[in-house]
Length: 384
Image 1 (cartoon, rainbow, N blue to C red):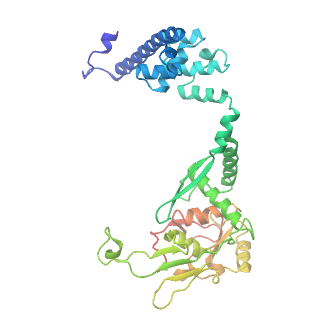
Image 2 (cartoon, rainbow, N blue to C red; image 1 turned 60 degrees about the horizontal axis):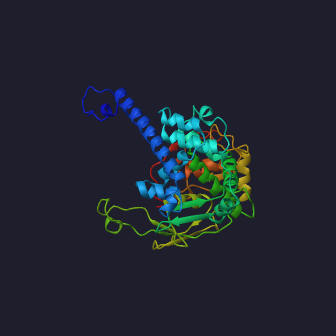
Image 3 (spheres, rainbow, N blue to C red; image 1 turned 60 degrees about the vertical axis):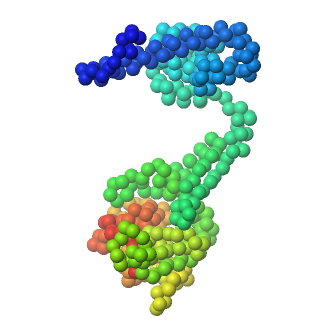
């Protein structure tokens, strides 16, 4: 059979099924050869060859002596020292692969009875998951996990986006995940075009929402600001000479927008700040301007009236969410939209912040006040 397997398979008449069978046969032979290696290693282990050669462990000696990875060496030693003859015999006879044998042995060593028979329907991944759930976590391992807990946020050079890494102990991670998913249940999961947010996007939005609630200490659960930001917008025309390649000569780009701490933001984020009630004032010389929350906010009495008019729910057709209701300028006030009832709509947090300010939808002006619809808007270039 081995000679047959080593014959060339370049012939065009060899079917895909035949090639698959050849691969399976090779895997069976590999398992049988590993079983032979394990048997020989068991004898050498009894003779304490590794100790005689000055190695600390049989795994260390096996890896060094036979040019194997520590993982493969550990698996061979596991089979060599196995007391589960049914698993060893199945490997030697070619009934199971070497990977299945080693994972089944580890499961059997954890006290799982009749492991070979009871796991016949598992794939290798399922075997590993079953094995891990049966391995006890020592106090030392638990302490090590806790000591290495961390949360890191790595910004880009301009701080326009961050990448994060998180290491957590299992119980803490489950607590955080449960809290985030519970918050996510309060958010709409489908965009107006039918797109469903991914799990990662839902967790992201939930975390931002919870952090916003924490900052809004004066009135948690509303859009009242817990912090005040100043935004500087450089309105000077940006031509191709300033912006670089990829643009026609003399063509204008969007203005450069920065927070007072130097973080650069895009037009979507700028619109979100403005929509929240920030005032924009631009001097005659079009110099950098300051945006604060000192004026042009939606008066509380007007906001309450708009929400009463919209029956205390999100005014988007088909949405009955009452979560974090906010008043939204249908026509942005920087585009001559007025801060009055006719230009305000009650929106839930998801439709306001995710659908409009992050995914580029805008309210159809022709849709009814209590059944508003969306349509796509052109690319945003910020206030003129």
